[in-house]
Length: 344
View 1 (cartoon, rainbow, N blue to C red):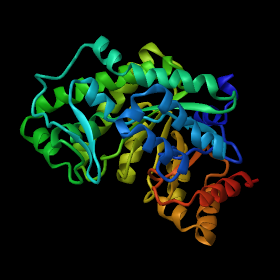
View 2 (view 1 turned 90 degrees about the vertical axis):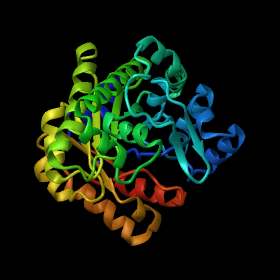
View 3 (view 1 turned 90 degrees about the horizontal axis):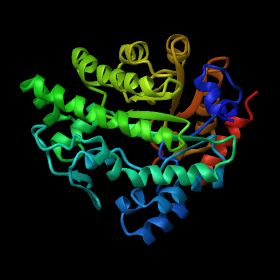
View 4 (view 1 turned 30 degrees about the vertical axis):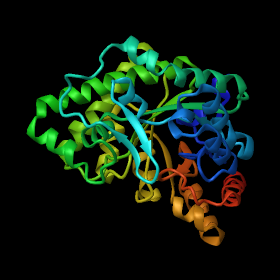
């Protein structure tokens, strides 16, 4: 039953020792079996949109490591694709889109969204059939602000310049963009829950560096709206939010106002601060430095021990402060898991 899964116990604010663990991007390029499928598939997008391949990749780290949750292999840019944007990936460059500067051409029909994203839900259904009763299945989507930065820029943007300019110059039009994207994200997450996801995560990867007022308007308010839409039709839904690299005040505001069950924190957020201030509000998820996972050795062991010790007695899910990096040695992941699961 769902209630027996360690991740779900944590999301109900139960403290567990050892804590449940999964990693962002745990199905990825650091795994030789992933690289083999990537070579066979020919493109990243093909893997995302082929249910059988996405299922195989999702299960690879579960088979190898036995994480407490499998997170669907997909991409946040499936939502812009459902909204009618052309999305492609360039080797050595990353994701690319045709930039948008208004909302006129965006697809707004939920049935069209669902048809476009049907392969994602097919992959979830396949994974659900293959997971055991103790392993949770997580779905996810990008947050409206992060997706808007890609849509306005036509790709990744470290300073989110085009999205910020749109928001400052045309607040009403930009608000409309966030609402349309948010509607699609909410529908996408509900469909993932219906396809078998035990919980879902909202990734706001570009949440850092915003003025406080804009963080409230562009990060917190859209997340709150999505959570409300999901809970209106799926009241029991479990939702994790990740406003990556926000200020400490921003993390608290996000926890207090959005209604999520858990907040994932990045590497720079002090774990002692999270235990004292954030854990009384929501379940905390995080926040091992992906670089220390590459380094391994005594540094990794100390970092793991410190996080586990600081979060002892609090509702907590062990994770990274962001996604696992391609050069991460597989043996270091085994070491991390052994260290976490030896906690008592």
